Length: 232
Image (cartoon, rainbow, N blue to C red; front, top):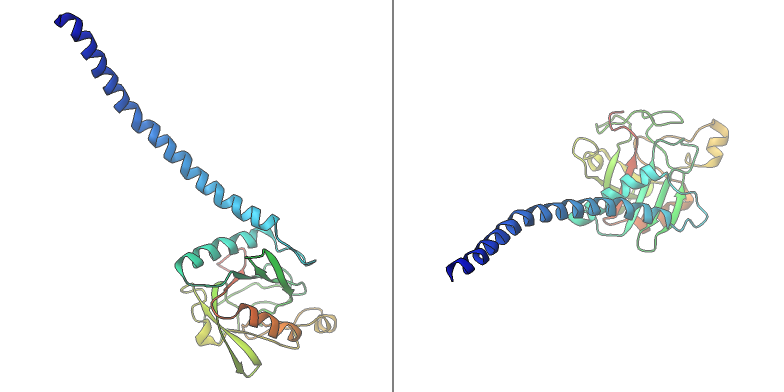
């Protein structure tokens, strides 16, 4: 009788040992595949958002600057540093004679504004070349900001900005880097001077868009100022 039972017991032991050896490998492979899908999903989501933007007959931003902006937006929203589903993108890799500021409503996936925007006078002429976080540098600062409160200053109605990147733009508020209007941010100025006017470091915008833009983006929305290299 014992000779009949032993083979059955041995078969069960071998079967149990085999399943314990294989299961962790299968689980590991599943985790790797899932992690890959998360990464792919993130990139796919950005492409999906970009490809489904409602342009409102405005030019779309470059995908590279938009992708970097949107990744940062998601991270800042997750951390609670911004609250609105509004993204303002400034692409300083482009000529100042072009409309290189976009205000995008990410709830409706719609471009609300596409506008001229000035860089600092020591940042460059037509093209932005050099950036700084230092007082009295009269240069623009790159990176991610949270928009603050509206106030009336020397440029009239203006919007405070809080730089969120240490050593890159975190001196923005103490430097007085704000969004304000300026008459040198206009097609007429470009026509007469061959380039857009420049600020003391503020992302100045056209007078006709000021109220609409800053009323929309005030109070903890995301502003991203893009340039291909952070070492410029």
